[in-house]
Length: 331
Image (cartoon, rainbow, N blue to C red; front, side, top):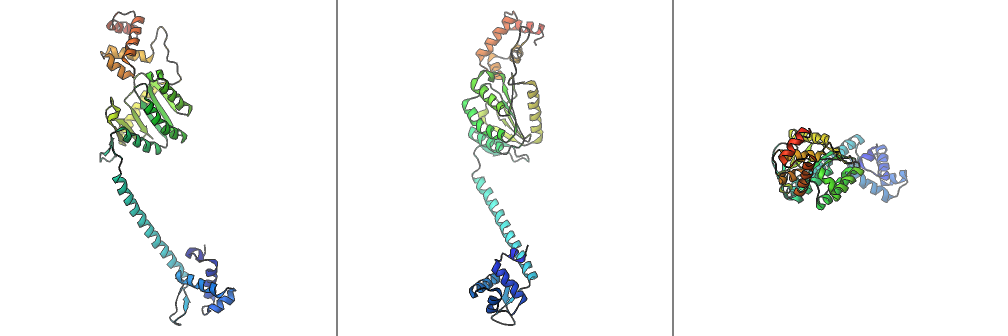
């Protein structure tokens, strides 16, 4: 790299500068003749050299200029460059501070910072939750774990999920999703689950699931503030202990779940996982309504499946069905 490159001289100004170094007393006519340039070209070059501090007024010959030594000129050029970089850095920091101030004024509604070191955030409102999920999905790098209880998913929920899932899967993020077994009975939900698997996502189902959960890159988790009502809001946390336990809970549920394409039919001497969970729930004294919520199915489905189980167990009451199921080793 030459001095002219550092200072930003064009070819003509650089040639004039070199000529003046070799001929300090040369005037415009001399330079024009030596370099075969017009007088105008020489004067323009001298103006450029003066602007770049490579020429200074001569103390020995007032009214003329002297050439600045290239070592001094280079040091000055580097100093000016450092000063310019400092000014730019200061301007950048000021812009960042201003941007932070503006963003604070336009903070997404529904977000309440907890103030703890792990930046836990309470988020209320479906729009605020969707916005938070969009930001987290954008920053995903390696894996996404999802627990989606409740059986059939609404058309609005599936529509909101598709663009985020499309982008995440396209970036090669490992995506694992747990649905409830009852989701297999809903066309829209099962079609969406199949779409996930066709795009390298992994889907499993289980009769019972933990509350709704999202874990981003094993680092950030989102859970509902009220599991029975996800519209009430969500908590976003980066607390390592909390996230680690949620990941362990997901992995345990994942191991017990069945891949989407697996056959869940039963024979005369066995139960499907859903039937087994119905027996367990009702044997524990839980109501049909509560069982339907836990399993993500209607009360009518719970009663229909229980009636079928009682018939298989040759029982006239639920109490008797529990006894006979235990005798068979079903409970």
